[in-house]
Image (cartoon, rainbow, N blue to C red; front, top):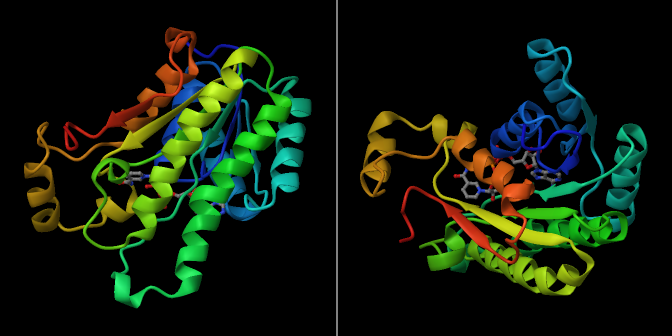
Length: 246
Ligand code: NAD
């Protein structure tokens, strides 16, 4: 198993890509603290996982990700509970598709808070608690390469995630902490999976591998980057998008 005995703290772990990361990390032998936006959703995700595998070493937390002290406290709880902390995954995020003329200032604030400040807070708290060999992983997006036709706040935030990732790889590398990001393409989480086939097909047709991604496709990249297989990889943004941004 690739993550045997490691402890991971994963934000946005209650559903979608984050939940797939949680499940794959557990399969690879990790202990996991998953974070949801509310304690209820975190508890529900833990319940579902434990119902499938009673031996899963998983707890649910719900810190306010925009509050660095709260995030650090949740990581300390994780460290105490499992006896260590090795991997922090800053995955929680929201998307936006608002046209530029319709943007309200609070729309920009919201995407900056959830997609940028939360990632920065997670990195800062992690930098205080991780030791040499520690790993920080951030969720970027394919839009961090070419932008998107509407909703400038979302690509703006993911370009920032890439900037945080490459910069902190340089700052934390000398301490033996690796920092990488995964940039998913169109991935079949609840939102995408709910779209009718006639909407999915043209999207899939535009992708070189001719299908949208599954959360597990993305989660596998996180497993690789979290594991010792990637021991000499830092500052990378790994695109997992079926070739969409080639
Ligand atoms: P999702 O909506 O299914 O899950 C988002 C997760 O983030 C949930 O667990 C939610 O609780 C958490 N979250 C959202 N707002 C939060 C807040 N204010 N505080 C705390 N937690 C909050 O979305 P997803 O598709 O699984 O997206 C996960 C990540 O992947 C995001 O960063 C997203 O930008 C990125 N991404 C998704 C796709 C895609 O096609 N699904 C593509 C590229 C990148």
